[in-house]
Length: 314
Image 1 (cartoon, rainbow, N blue to C red):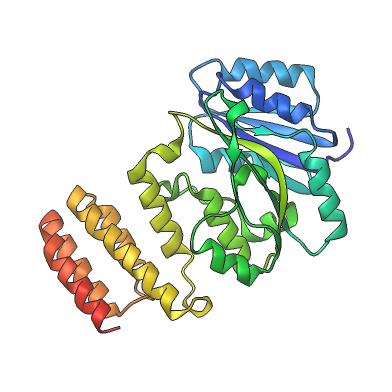
Image 2 (spheres, rainbow, N blue to C red):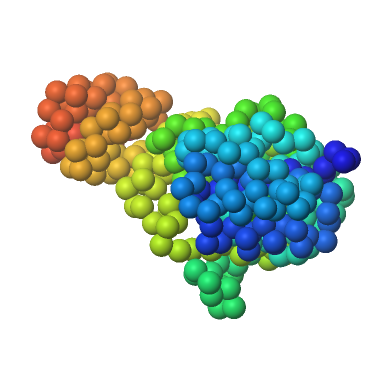
C-alpha cells in the first residue's frame, strides 16, 4: 500500500456505543489515501471486537491494543505508529463530513507554509445530530504569534477538525501525558506548536460533528479547571503577552489555587503556585508555598491576603 497522505489517530476507551459511526465517517471520505489507527485504550466493553472487525475488512485501518493509559498516551501511541505526511485526530464518538480531508488537502496544497489546518463544524448531543448547532471558531491565515495570543485566552481550535504536518509533530514532540493536563492535551499542543513558530489556517467550512454526552470528560469541572490552569502555567511566555494578559492569568491562577486549597487539593495548589514564579514577584510565591506546605487547607485566608498584596504591588 502506498504511503498515506493522512494518518488519522482515533483513541478509543469503552466506545462501543459510538465507534461504528466515527469509523464509518472516515471510510466515507471522498479523499481515500489515508490510514486510520484505532488505539484501544484498555476498553472493557466491545470496542476491541468492533475495531478488529473494521481492521480485518479494510487494509487502511489498523488496531493497536494497550492497557489504559488515558487520552494523551493513546494519541501518542497512534502518532508513534503513523506513516502519513499529515496527522489528523478523531475521537471515537465524533464524526466527520465526507469531504473534510479533500477540502483540507486543497488548502494545504495552495498554502505550503501552513503547518496546522482546522475547520468549523457542529455540536450535537448524544444521538441528535439533526438538531446540531454551529460550533464556532476562528478563520483565515493565522501566524504563530497571533495563535499564541488567541489560544492563551482559550482553546478556539477543535481537535477533531485539525490536520497537522507530521514534521512539526516530530519537532515539538508527543502530547503531554501529565495527568494534570488530562482533557486539554490538544490545547497544550496548539500552544506548543505556536511557540515553535508554526503557522495555522482556519477554514469557515463546517466539516465535523462534535458529540456531547454524559461520559464526556469535559463534564468534570474540577479536572477541567486543573487542566486549563496547567496549560496556562506550562505555556506562559511573559515576553509574548501584554501586561493586561499577565495580570489576567495571575488572577485566574490565584483564584484556582485558593479554590484547590479549600478543596484539600494541596499538591495541585502547590504545583500551580510554584510554576507561576515568572508571572509575579517570587517572594510572594515562595511565601505562599511555605504557608500551603505548612498549614494545608488552613492556609486559605493567609494565601488570599498575600495574593491581594501581591496584586497591589505588581
